[in-house]
Image (cartoon, rainbow, N blue to C red):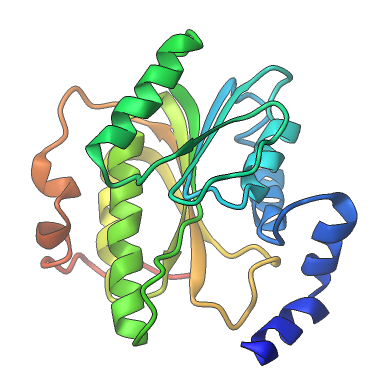
Length: 228
């Protein structure tokens, strides 16, 4: 643990986060993604899933239009961030959906323009188990996004390079007009994480249940997709 912490403290993005008041170095990943894909400047509403400690929420507040409706959701309580709301909820639970909807209704918001997801599972153990849990978490976040995302909206998610990558890309391409994988420089080169930028949500009237069924989705191996 001490060694890993030492490496983190030598990282330039760790120091930049401290200097600029961001709660985590992960804020720079979102800053770099937005600088390239420009999904925040026009977002009047942003939902950040697995948001603690709040670095991405801070970026959303700073880079979305003034007065944008920004919500962070996490199992871990998020310290208050000026200009943002927070919910302490499990994104896989039904009551989380109800809590998000209540907050939207009380603020006169019908849908989110952008849904963000930078979550990682806290499972420990072998890499294969962690990768499987991460893949499932991505689909859980996507399922929630489809409930609240506005037509033509954007979904930004972290994924791990794993055996499930092609299945996840297949799923996303059924729901969004543009899907692109990238790895911002703020993401450590040794990390298996990459980010998928999904733009122009198709907002289908009905989504086939199998598409967001984790067991079904990951039991089928789609054609090979290039990983960045």
